[in-house]
Structure formats: C-alpha cells, structure tokens
Image (tube, rainbow over all chains, first blue to last red; front, side, top):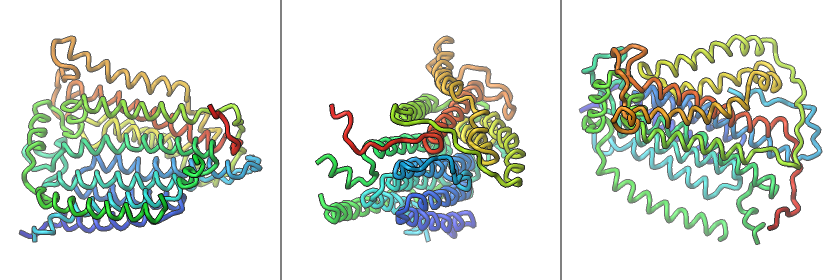
Length: 100
Length: 118
Length: 251
C-alpha cells in the first residue's frame, strides 16, 4: 500500500518541524530563539493544515507566530532595561519589527 | 512500507519532546528555558494530530462536505486546539515569573539563582 | 549538582525514555490508520447536534465541561500574570517617547486594523460552521488590536485599549460559560448539556448552545490575551525598574 500525496507531504513537513525544533533549542540567545520559535510556529501550522486540522492550524498560527515570540521579546526588553538602570527611556529604539 | 514508515510521526514527536527537555536541562537563561518548554509542548500537538490522521480523510468540517465523507479524528484536534491557546497563557505566566525573579535577583541564570540560596 | 553531572543524568534518563517510548510506539496504530473509534462516535454525535464543525461541537458541547476547565486555567494564568506584573513601589511609570513610523507602515497598519478585527469577529461568529471559533478568533482579535502599536506607537494603543474594562470583561465572560451550563440544570438535564433548539444544519444559528458558549470563549480569550499583552507591554515599554541586588523582604 503506497502512501498518498498527503502522507508524503506530511512526512516532509514533519521532518522540517523536527529540524526547526532542534534549531530552536540549540539557539541559546533568547532573542534569536524567539524568531526561531516563530518559524517553528509557522511550520507547525503548515503541518496541521496538511494533517487536515484547519482549526488547530489557525490557533497555532496566531499563538505560535505572534503571541509567544512577542511575549518573549517583551520579557527580554524589560530584563535588559533592568540591566542598564541608567537608561533614560526617552530614546526608544522601538522593537516594531517583532510585532507580527 | 508500513513498518517503520508508519511510525515516523510518532518518533518525530518523541524527538521533539526529548530535544526540548535537553534544552531545559542545559539552559543558562530562564527565558530560553521557557522557549524550550514551548518546544517540548509542541511534541504533544504533533503526536496527537498524527495519531488522529486517517488516510484519505478530510478536515472534520461539514459545512461544505457531505456528512458521509471520510474525515480525520476530530477528538484529538479539539484537545490540541484548546491546549495551544491555554499553553500560550501559561507561557505568559512563566515569563512573568522570570521577570519577577530578575527584579529580585538581577539574574535569569538558573545556576546563579541556586548559588544565591546558598 | 554540577552541570556535567546534570547533563549526564539527563542523557541517561532520556535514553531510557527513548527506549520505552519507541517500544510503546510499536503498539500504537500506524500513521493514517482507518480505526478511529472515538472520532467516528464524535462525528455521529456532531451530526445529531446539527453542528457543521465537529471540533467546535466537541469543545463546546460534547466536552464542554473539559473546556470549562481549560478556560479556567486560562483565566488563572491571566490572573497570575497580572498579579506578578503589577507595578511595584520601586518602579516608576514613564511615557515612552514618540516613535517615527514609516508612512507606509502607518498606512498599512491603519488599513489592516479594521480588517483584522473584522476577521477576528468573523472567525468567532462562524465557529460552529467553518474552521475557527472562540479560541482562534479570540487570538486573532487580540493580535489585531496590536496593529495599532505597529502603525503608530504605544500611546495610541493605550488610547484604544480599555484595559480596566477588559479586565472585567474577561471575568464576566468566564463567568458566563459557567452560568450557561446552568441552563441544562434548569430544564432538568445535565450541567452544560446542549438544551437550546438545535436549529437548521449549517446555518449561523445552528448547534444550540455551541455558538453561545463559543462567543463567550471568544470574548474571554480576546480580553485575556489583550490584558496579558498589556501588562507585558507596560513592563517592557513604560516601566523603569530599579533592580534590587540588596536583599529585601528577608522575612
């Protein structure tokens, strides 16, 4: 019994997910890791779509690519501000880029 | 074909779980550890949805499909769906804890936190 | 425990987990199996309940009590994070300076904000029909609102975000879920049993209690995530904290 196209596609995406997950763990800088986690969220959403789970893909897309990385970025920003107490706060180099 | 091949998704899920746990154990930054926990958590999504997949099945939504069409298992999808959103808020709670730790101890390195206790 | 000892301990445990996991997997149905006893029963029940989206039917009808539990975790996490991120006495609030935004970013953000909000409402409202529902739509709604931050700055976001109100809305929506379950008890059925008229299959009003609970969850998730992000943004952008390396609260 040969696997159909969906199954082959699912297996390919699965392997991509495994690789991205490994990269996410091995990325030791949390700011970079947040970006890799966003990519992981995207590939997971793709996998769920291939596995015929559009409901799950939709929520993974919102949470995995937007909310979780954003929360990590904001946490880092607060922590780094604490590390540099002399920062005046008037000069904000806004992290707009991370906001999607 | 169906021997080990049919187990690849399950094994990938196991790999993701272990790799996430490895990251947790070796992490030197609690923010990074929270990220690794998120990775380990996604293993459960992969496992559940792989178990629920049915060959030739379509999405379990009947708004534009015949009620007799073959669909994949919706139960595991429902489990995964709620867990993703709830998991995100739990991640937020953990990150809030990390922020508090940093305020109190000025470090997010778990090893240095240990030495603070003495 | 030293670092290397910890890693060695982990590798040993991980090897054991891996062995037993692979052994367990060989007993699992293979990928793509045709045997889904729970799935088949859930699909049959869903069609009986006139709900087109099986996943929504499971979440808000067949497993509604479980979802109530999940939702309580969500509420608890939001509460916990709120409590942890309150501004303390030694932290000062400041107004972040204005940020220059590219005109194209501003234009796209302004155009996309209403579209994204509408998409969120659509996804929540059609949860019982098409892929989507309260959990997904709520997340879309919450992230859509933050386009205001991308398009303008933190001050603009604060103006369109009634946080105190949303705090209350979050709790009310969580309470609504619990209260809706009582409808079953009043009519003599079980808690959270779907007792409303089921309506015509594949219409917006079908599914009985499903769209109602779905909407409550949508409101709760949206307001919960907005409140969470609000506290994080407040901490990250508008709070100057003095880190206290000196010991405090030694009690």
